[in-house]
Length: 324
Image 1 (cartoon, rainbow, N blue to C red):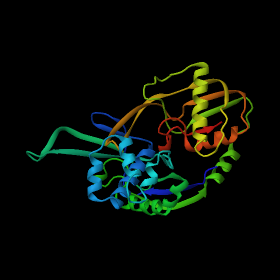
Image 2 (tube, one colour):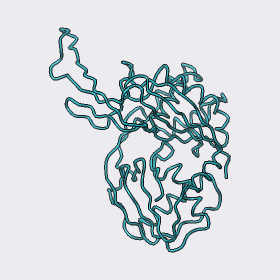
Image 3 (cartoon, rainbow, N blue to C red):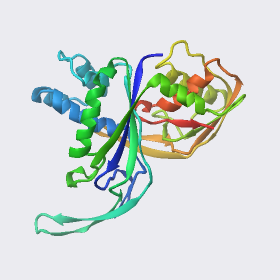
Image 4 (cartoon, one colour):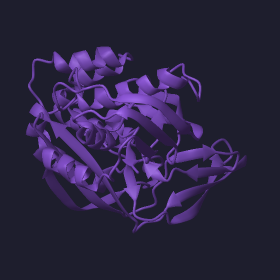
C-alpha cells in the first residue's frame, strides 16, 4: 500500500456559514455540508498567493483549461508546496466538511441602489446560514510526496479559518472558523479501522452514500442497466482501490439494485474560475451489490473505496459511502 497520512480537522464556526443549496427569488437555502472542492479551493488560493510571484499569478489567470493550469504548476522551475496538488495522479484527497448538528439562523440582506442610495426594488433576501458556534470536521488525506507538505497544510488551514473562511459571503464576514484540534493517523491504520467496522457479508453488500455520487458528464439518472451497471460500479471500486494498492481484482458483481435520489450539484472550479454543475445521486442513495463470489481483497477494496469515494470528483469528497 502506498504510504499515506490522514489529517482530521476539528473546527468551530466563529461566524455564520453559508454556501447555497437552493436559490429562490428572496431566499438562499444553505447546503447541509461544506463541499470538499470548497475546502480545496480555499487552501489552494492561499498557498498559491503565498508561493507564486505576481507575474506567475497573472499568467495563471489568463488560463481556463484545468489541464493547462495543472501542467503549469507541475512544470514550474520552483519546487514549492503547490506542486503535489496538481500531480498527474491525485496525491491529495479532500473530504466534505460535516457539521455536528444543523443549527440554522436567518440573515436578511437589503441591497442599496447606488445611484440614489435607497433600497433597490425587490432586493430583500433572506439567507439561511449555519450558526456561529457549530462544530464541524473534515479530512485531508496525503499520499506519497504530498506527505512533505503536511505541516504547511496544518498551518495554512488555521490561517484560512481565521482570515478568510469557507463558502459564500466571505466579504461580509461569513464562513470564519477556528481549528480546535488536528488528529493525525497513518492511512493504512485508517483502512484497518474501517475494515473492522464492516458488517459480515456473503453474497450481498449494501452501499449507502454519505456524499453525492457524481454520474458521468452525459449520463442520465439511470445510465446503465443489468450487467453493464454491475461492471460500471465494480470498475469504480477497483479504480479507487488501485490508487493505493497493487493488483486489485475486479469484483464479480451479478447485478446492482439501486435506489437513487437524482439531484444536481454545483461546485466552483478553482482552475476554471466558474461553476460546474453535475447530475448526482444525492446522499442517502443506496446500491445493493449482489456478488457471484467475493474477491480475496473484498474487505480492503470496500474500506478504501468508502474512505476515498468512487466516481468523478471523488478526490474532492464526492462518492463516499457506508457499507451496511
